Length: 124
Image (cartoon, rainbow, N blue to C red; front, top):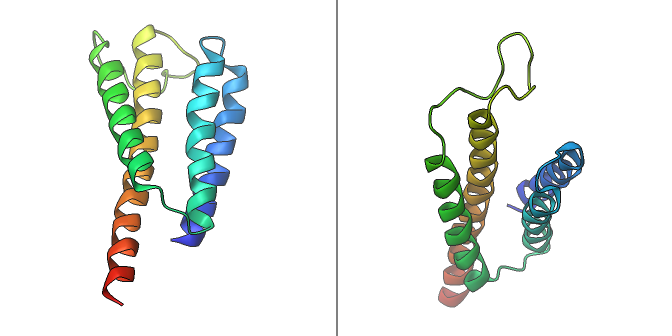
């Protein structure tokens, strides 16, 4: 788990860096990704805060579902022939929801790993 957490720390730092080009709500998304990068570094060092992970899992899951339900039609991640250029608001919403979903998945992984680690230490 240690090196998986280090990998995700780098990934989320890159996600935060790439948000510098995003014109909408840049600070919000940078903070969302930097928070998960920080949690990843803490997990890399063997520190699991299960209460914080539980709360963050709920926040990220609810946020992802909320953004996903704002779409009027699913139009995919990519614009045909233009790559990552945004053609419609729905494409931006699906990308934002997917980003939050990735954050949720990683935080859930850390939460499960933390529970396993905590219960293993009790048995010994």
